[in-house]
Length: 166
Length: 189
Ligand SMILES: [Zn+2]
Image 1 (cartoon, each protein chain N blue to C red):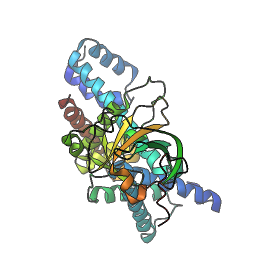
Image 2 (cartoon, chains in turn blue, red; image 1 turned 120 degrees about the horizontal axis):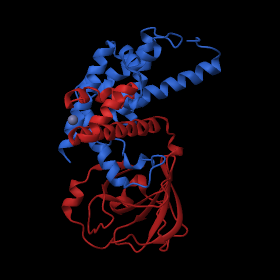
Image 3 (tube, rainbow over the protein chains, first blue to last red; image 1 turned 45 degrees about the vertical axis):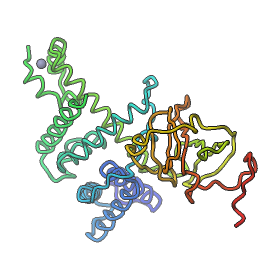
Image 4 (cartoon, chains in turn cyan, brown; image 1 turned 30 degrees about the vertical axis):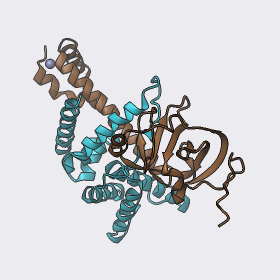
């Protein structure tokens, strides 16, 4: 890591990290307001713990902390981000039935929310955050094989669960 | 030839694109003749796509300024009122632009009470609305604000018909409209 750099660079870099932290929080709590609050709290905890932007552990530390805050967050099922209004047509694909797609994604979202905590976090980091198993292992403070197992179990559970309602 | 068990062990690597050419060929061979495994792999792949899509939706939500949200055109109609206005939403508040007036489809007929109660209450701008999937809504005397999606050929534009009490909620009360067909300037209170 190149250090915090000049002020402008540092500010932009922090903003990028902030977006990433909020993004992970949205993927776990699906409420923008709660996600912002939880991200804020993670940054506050980082400052309190003396974890600073120049350090290599900074991003994994924040992702781990916001992940844990989200998993412990009282689950509010109301007013989740409405999926259909944020759907974009996937590139290269023909027009699809938005309502149908949104409904299917909704089922996936709910099934993910019902996974055991570790499986859920590992799966979200792998498939929604597109992180490598190694990076996830450093966020979750687990071994790479343990992360693989969590992702594998989560996928298997979802495939079975979602296969049932077809 | 690989068996089902050994094929399925490779599902994660297959999804992650981590299979070596030889292993990939073995899996492909198996999938070519085993319906069960093929079905499972296809479902896993579809799930993978859906998860990625959820991820990109969340990323957009996380960075979106309120002002850059997709423009939503709301066609408002007060229940049993003769006219509707087209509204645009931006920056978290309603900017009204009376583009045209019209009557929401089916606005005079009853909606099955069950349809409304079964729908989830969700936020739409500053409103809490019940959203229905059918555009063949029929509505009489609904107590809630009911929103109905109408397909639009432009993916950046949502058209949402609002019925019922939407216009009575303070946050959504439309400002005085010079082009409203019936003058009802309620701002001077
Ligand atoms: Zn098989």
